[in-house]
Amino acid sequence: MGKTIYENNCAACHDNPAATKAPGFDTLKAMRREAISYAIAQGRMQVQASRLTSEERTALLDFLAGQGPTRDDWSASMSCTRERGPMNLDVTPAVAGFGFDPRNHRRLSAAQAGLATADFSNLELAWAMAFPKATMMRSQPAIVGTNVFLPVADSSQLFAIDIAGPPCLRWVYRHDAPLRTSVAFGELPGSKRKVLIFGDLSANIHLVDAASGERLWKQHVGLHPMSLTTGTPILHGDRIYVPISQYEIMLGANRDHECCKTHGAVTALDARSGAKIWTAHTMQEARPVRDRGDGKMIWGPSGAPVWTSPAIDTKRGVLYVGTGEATSDPAAPTTDAILAIDLKDGSIRWSFQATANDIFLTGCLFNRSGPNCPNKDSVFRDVDFGASVIIAQRTDGSDVLLAGQKSGTLWALDPDSRGKVLWRRDFGQGSPVGGIHWGIATDGERVFVPINWPYGVPRGANATQQPGLHAVKAETGEVLWTFESKADCRGERAERIRGCASSMGLSAAPVVIDGAVVQGGLDGMVRAFDARTGKVLFSFDTAREFKTINGVEGRGGSIDNASIVAANGLLLVSSGYGMFGQMPGNVLLAFKPKTSR
Image 1 (cartoon, rainbow, N blue to C red):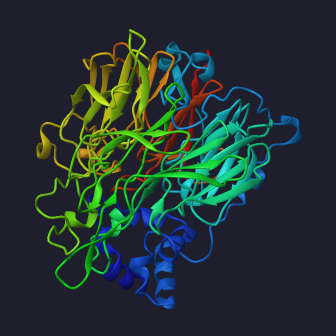
Image 2: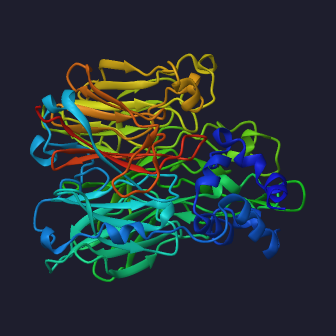
C-alpha cells in the first residue's frame, strides 16, 4: 500500500530530484521517520499530503522509513567524563557565525585554526563521527575553544562536542522540529552568559545556553505559513538579526495552490527576551492581481526571500543581505537584489537589483503553462543571491561589498554610493542551483568564488559555465587563477558517485585558513589550495563508507552549503547533502597533520 501511495503522490517530484530540488527517493529512504512525518504533517509537504487519510500517511511512512523512531542511545556512551574537566567558553570564538566574523570574510588565521598552510600537504583522517538516519549535513557549527556546537538538521538535534582529545559529548539539545540554520555564538549583553542562536524548519529562533544546552527562549519569526529561516542569525550588541526566507517557490506551481503570498524579511529581536523590535519587509503584502483563468486569483507581489546571512557594517550602521527571485508578478524591485538595512530601525537605506523580472516557481520547470506559472515575458532564471555579502577593503582604505549571485556573477558594489557597481565578473549564465550558490570567502587580497554545475546537466547544455574555483582580485575583478572542476569517474567512482559524468559542481561556501583555501564538491571531494597560486595541497574523497568512533554506520556524500571549518589543529568537514539529486551522507570528518613515524 505504501509503495502505491508513494508512486501516485510523491514519485513525480522525488524521482526527479535534480529538476524539482526535492530529496531523492534514496534520500527519503535514509531519513528518520520523525523527519518525514514532520514534513507531511507540518512542513513543506503538508499541502501535498492533505489529501491522504491517516491510514495512508502511516502506510507511506512505513514504506519510506520503516516502523518506530530512530535510536539515539549512542550519545549516552559518548558523554564526557569528569576527567575532561569543565567547559571553557571564556575564549575568543574561532567561528562565531556563518562568516566567522561580522564582515563575513570566512577566514581563519593559523592561530585560530591550529593549522598553517604547510600542514595541508600532510593531512590524514583523524576520526569520523556519524549521526543515525541523517541525510543532510548542511549546518555549520560554532567553535569556541575546544567546543564544537554542531546542528544535525534532520535529526532535530544540536550536539556540543569537545574535541580536546578523543571526541566526547558535553550535552545534546533536542527539538521536535528539524533544525535548519547554522549556529551563531555570542555573549548576552549585560552578562557573561554565552549563548547559541539558530533556527528551525518552523521559522523559530532558539537561544540556548552554550554551557548547559538549556533553552532560554524560542521566538517564532515567520511572516507567513511558508516562511523559513535559512541564513544564520547574528548577535550584534543587544540584538539578534534574523534573515527570513520561504518555500512557496516549491509549492506555487500546484494548481490547487493560491499563488503567491509569501515574501522575505529581516527581523531584529531583543537578545535577552526574543521580543521583536522591527521587521524589514522586502516588499509590501501581496494582494489579488488578476484572475488566472479559472476563477482563482494570482496574488502579488511575492518572493524576495532572504537566504543569506547578514553582514554587519558598524561604520555605516547598516546590515547587508541578498534576496531571491519573485514567485508571482509583479516582480518587486527588491528581488534578486542587495539590500542595505538600517540596524536601528529596519528601514531600507538603499537596494541594488542585479536581475529584474526574475519570476520563478520550481514546478514550472516541467510545465510552464501551469495556471500559476509566470508569463513568457518573465526572466524565469531563479538567480537569487544565495552567497552572503562580504565587506572587504580596497588598497586605498575604502570599503567594497562583494556579492555572489546564482547567475554566475560576482559583483563589487560601493557602499557609499548606494550600491554603485564598481566591477563585475561573470562565470557563465548560472542556473537554479548553479553559478555562485552558498558562499564566497576572502583573504583580503583575493576573493574565492566557487561555480556550481548541477547534477544531471550535460556539459554541452551550457558551454559558457565555468565550474570550479576562481581566485579573483578583490580590487579589480581580475581572475588570478582558476581550478577547473572536472568529473572524476576513474575506476569504481563511476558507479559510486551519483551522476558522475556531470559531477563537477562546487556549491559549498569556501574557507580561508592561513594561506590556504578549502573547498568541498558535490562529488564528495574536499580540496585545499594554495591561496596565492591555486596549487592543490590536499584532496580527499569523502563519498564513501567510514568506520566511526561512535559506532554508528557512516557514509559521506556531497559537500554543500557551509560544511567546512577548522580549530584545534583539525580540519572539520561535514559530508552529505541529500537535496537537488545530490548524495546524502551523515558524517563529520576530522583531519589532522600526520605525525612523524
